[in-house]
Length: 366
Ligand code: ADP
Ligand code: MG
Image (cartoon, rainbow, N blue to C red):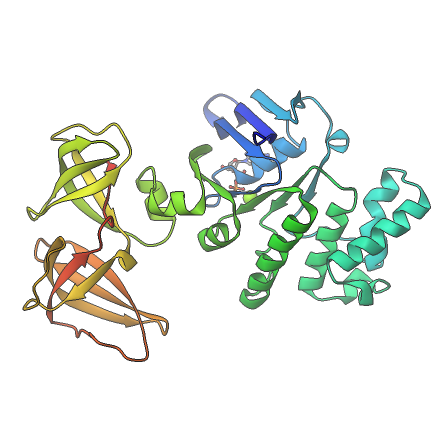
């Protein structure tokens, strides 16, 4: 069976202000979000993530374009009529109401029968593991528990789509990690389409089925976490997602799905590439720090490598980052996982070869 789309956004723009003060918060965005998908909008602050969510929710109307929900254009449908619910960053719970009353609030507003409401609230309490606190006021529970109540309240009316605007950003690191797993579980158990907003690339990589990377109101790339990380479409995506090394290069020979390139120091290698490169073009080669290793200059190597000197060693516990000043003047970072029996350790000032793993290099247009 073909995958169906939960939400289709068709060339949607949202312009705030007029004339010279006009800002395109969302700029001709087109994307289809599938049913039952954990979809993430990822990008830096101010790139238009919240505006795009508010357009889907119906709190804003698009300046142009269409938003289609399960085949129906809903651009003019008011928010309360849409089978969509939102979890806001600040939770927006009612502090004087109990946990159970908060969870039932949406159902009450929809005028659902009392028996159905009671059954649904207890189902939701169980889903978010809050049964023991059903009668507690939400002003008297922790931040993580408030987050669960906000989720349960949003899920209670069984929306087709749940929008989550940076819902974990107020939580401390450990709790955030726990809630990431919890959110994945809730999405899988309910089968509801989640559209999740974050500026945290690690959160996006660990939680999402697919990610849309946004910058300045535009979507730059949509893909699985693997696609986005290993095959970034451009410099912004490569730079925003994870750490990466950038090396100046020139295209020698473009080919099917890749290209032969020459780095500034004269090294020639094959790199994966998006289509559209031409011979002679100046480009940038990107290599992830964990896709290269160091070797001593007297060791024989057959893989492509660059010569340099270790300029800095940074220990992170799980791994060590070696900063290498390449002979051509560029800096390259190599990440080496720390093991109990460590073979090669390298010291500041040591001459080294930076060795690329096969397939490590990707060429991007400048
Ligand atoms: P994000 O959620 O990615 O941080 P937003 O969607 O909140 O970004 O904002 C995108 C851009 O639109 C920003 O430049 C912001 O200042 C602007 N913007 C958002 N809402 C309004 C508004 N109501 N009026 C004017 N400008 C707005
Ligand atoms: Mg925002």
